Image (cartoon, rainbow, N blue to C red; front, side, top):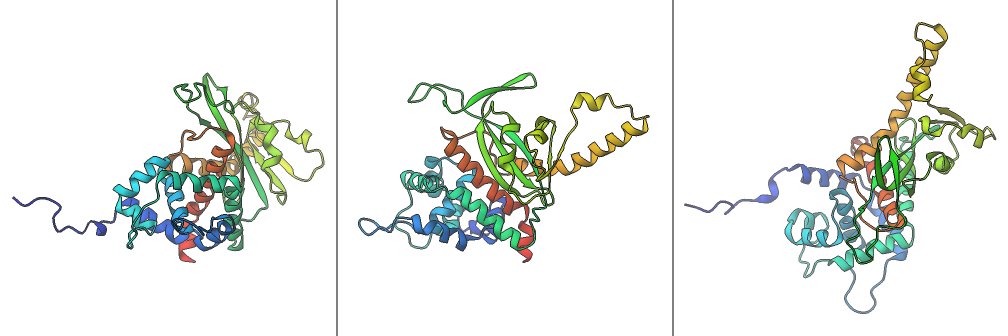
Length: 317
């Protein structure tokens, strides 16, 4: 009996992962991102020559898309030909990046704040194509759990994370606060804080400064008093209890209810980016210790999420 797999061309199967990578290869602005990193990348005048920036950037993005740690990414490069092909490592390469090389590249991006610059670059490109109008913003936050185990080298939980209560459940971790374009739902600003930080304290930091209207849920009530200069109009949701007490048979209360429905329709745009990083990219728990590293990762995820959201338009262009 012939063994299965002999003579098969495994590179021809159109798997979902292969199609995803091919699509992202087309929509990510690789040349502009490489130019952003190049001034900070080591030149390798002595010792072994460094891997090309394009290779390391593609590996870094695959880590974000598939939720791989540095050691897991190294092993995946050995085990998965598709990953090597995407990173350009199948063309006669005599070595593959190890986990230390992958770690150093990530640290380089973190040290120079390049995740924020990548998001800004992506948004500049999307704005140039008319995909981001910047007339209004929606702000919101989501909880990101962190490991609460103390079975680590320090014997403690991450000191920069914190616990908070939402509803009847306690969470330990951080918050990802975002500001998105009210028209397209694309993320323009990302701020990371401990989980117990009040949403209202971060609200103004989520604005890009060009919007005229800002939409937020009931957790931001009172923000109008903090922004008394009148530079923007805040449209904050009515408290749930107050809305439940509305008498819809009363004409004025019915108008209030309709206004709340319209505001909720705009605020719904902010949920789409959260869904992409949590469901499409599988990001549900912090990987690193410290807010700086995790905020850099989240910012990168939202930049890639923006490209994923408009991939069909970019592909046509």
